Length: 107
Image 1 (cartoon, helix red, strand yellow):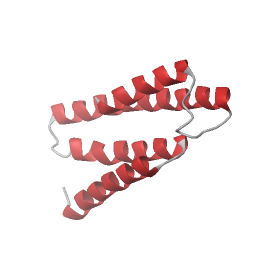
Image 2 (spheres, helix red, strand yellow; image 1 turned 60 degrees about the horizontal axis):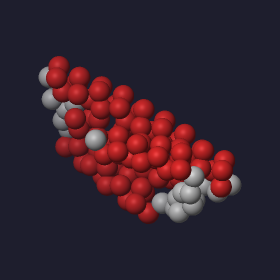
Image 3 (tube, helix red, strand yellow; image 1 turned 30 degrees about the vertical axis):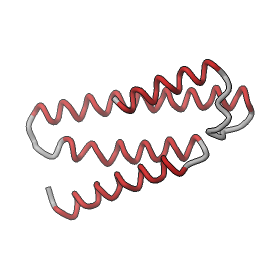
């Protein structure tokens, strides 16, 4: 892998983490998580071994499902509370879905 490309992916990974940590809004937290996902996939599949490609595809599919679940949980929460703020997570369904989505993102 080109050293400049690797540096770009690592900087994108740091940027996505910083955006996620510093966000107060669900959409900016989701955007930071997506930047992380898009930055880590080329790093996983940099060796052109079939198992590395398979691992990258599996990682992408799980992360896409978790992102969908996170957006759905934030939409339910916004529908019930009227706000997109992260600190206003009061509805039990959205809290459970968000916990599941974050667990999938961590795994």
